[in-house]
Image 1 (cartoon, rainbow over the protein chains, first blue to last red):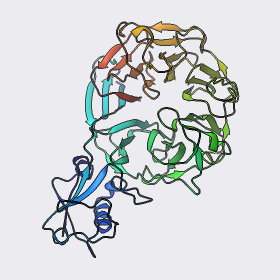
Image 2 (cartoon, helix red, strand yellow):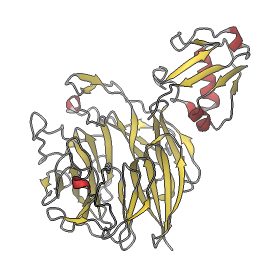
Image 3 (cartoon, chains in turn brown, green):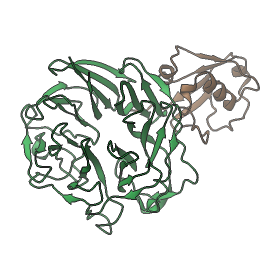
Image 4 (tube, rainbow over the protein chains, first blue to last red):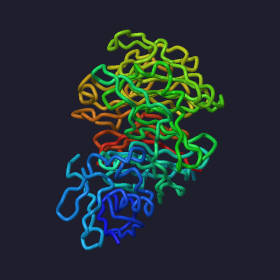
Length: 98
Length: 371
């Protein structure tokens, strides 16, 4: 089980409170997490990564276990603590005004 | 008794303003999707409770929302706007070529007859259509692949397709406008397109009378006379009497012929409204006076409408999609400002009242007349 923390606006869009819990069919990677997330919550398609290119949106970052994983290849295995659910996978929106 | 529903898009959410036919007291609901930019909301003429909304964010991209109960509840629809085939390039600000890239939906235009069919005008400029209520979107690629497209260029707000007019009398006829390419018309439901810019003159481009490259801000038509079009261009208010084949200037005695919105009275096809704005860089009303100008002669002769509007120290703007009319008699006219005010007139513009004063910056206003 993977725990995912979404930015507040995406929690509202997905109509969830708090963390999202996902079961992955295979190895825990950023790509697998996003696939599972978008399958369970299709309204999030396109809001975290481009639907066509799968490129991460520029103002979002992926953090876990105190590390910025945003620039790791999408099929990089996530830390064991994330894969086991001990630590969450954080999807973080840039702090910026406007 | 009939009623009015105003759909207001702002930089920080959508608002629904409702009143009965007297238009004296308004209920305000919202913000819907607070914190997101609501570029446009529009109801289906065939089913007023069916409303489409364009919700976007610099962080999270584009979302399409749909309501089936007049804006009380919403469901998230499809947001995959994928250009069809080769993407191609267009002019960038610096004169180089740049690939088309989807940024956002500027305008949603529901079909006149089918609540499940809706058109979307997007940035970078292209026209999409959904036939399943917004679940999936297909590009009408004949527009973006027009032979003139490589020399289209963005206006200051981006290369947006911001106006879509569906001709009620000629099935398959669609007018669109792009900043800064100009006006185009299709007579076959969006498959093929022709530029409709003859008569426009823009001194800021190498060839002032070029076939494309004009910064058209908005076009408007009266349903009963779809061959007559009115245009607010970056500068110049224009009129066409032949369905866009040619245009002539009708700026007349306006204090400035720059502005964004233009609209037509619901029952008087020769009565039109604009909001003159000082430009090229100020983008606020001349002399700090917020004035709507009305022509009862289809242009050329204009009168200032000021009663109820601030006539000192007013420096707001009124954006291209932020004016609308209802179809009651007398005709109601509405507009929203970048200062967050939405003004309404229940007498064709003779006098105005602020319906709300302190919304986020208003991007769009649409009016629905309810039975």
